[in-house]
Length: 451
Figure 1 (cartoon, helix red, strand yellow):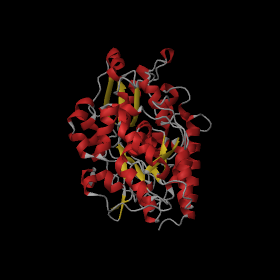
Figure 2 (cartoon, helix red, strand yellow):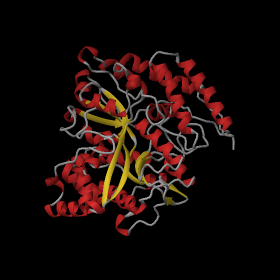
Figure 3 (spheres, rainbow, N blue to C red):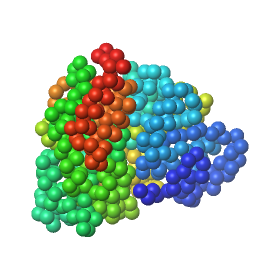
Figure 4 (cartoon, one colour):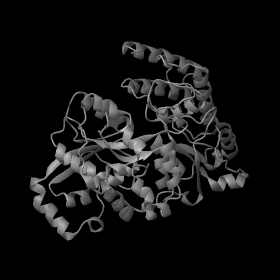
């Protein structure tokens, strides 16, 4: 994927032109205090919204000349591995970590994160959407501040649908999507009927796959914490998924995650894409997307049940307890998740580029609502996602596209690798799910479940 600014490690990242962001006086202040500035290291994922945040470094440093930002920007799976290792060992490499709704309460319970219960009044905690705020809290205290939040939805090419005489339904079903993908698949013109996540990882392919399984009537565990990965519902869902991508997906689908599919869809190489609502701003931006003027959107498809068919996630900024620069880190994360930051991005990058899904005030902002036709749709999807009731049959866990227990990171990644192997044709669906079931049973038994 081609990002608007080059990505880098800790040093050498690109910054936006100073003239657009800070005054001459700000530059002078920055230079005068550079020798005394405290440096904080920020670890984040290479998604578009975070790349924008990195590009606005000069704006933050001009307003806070006593703080310098160093960046570590990594692909999602690599970022998670490095952060998990560092925080579990109290390594202290990072002062700010980009984590999600899965890690925040688990890491907070273990004492790995700095509590954020004493934010200044002008931060307006109550402006944060309640489902997002609740997902980042432990015992009623926030332990991470939401940078952007998302559910999932379906994007489609309106021009291709019109040419084929297909009318989008109010609530698409997976059967309909399969039929549409077959009709619209056009490999001779580099257009896949559908693009879906295939890259293995609990937050990559399994984020999507979990919602698919939910909608097919499946769940990760029964009420006694017995895995159900080899159940008929899982077999139906994964069989459908593999056949769909094998027949109508892009080449190499098992290597495509969020960023790869975003690039494919924005170039016009996919007729349909089901993924995060956070992609909407980039896809509707004509400077970023070749299909901005022919983009339609609809709810995430359903099969047997709408329960758990669309996820809930918040990429958020947290301070590890091992940081030696907690005050400076707190200043930065409050700035990057504030109403003022939303305003800064809207004015400097365009209103479709503001971080979505976190603040009610964003959806009351006329500039944003006018620029983003998807705004009300996205906020309703976030509000309707229910992590406490995500499957047709009752389950013992919290989470829609993940299971809110420490063991899930290993379980989800391992199952994701097996599902990706089935998608790549290296094993059958039945063999993959049978192996995943046995591996998960072993993991849960070693962890002492049921507890």
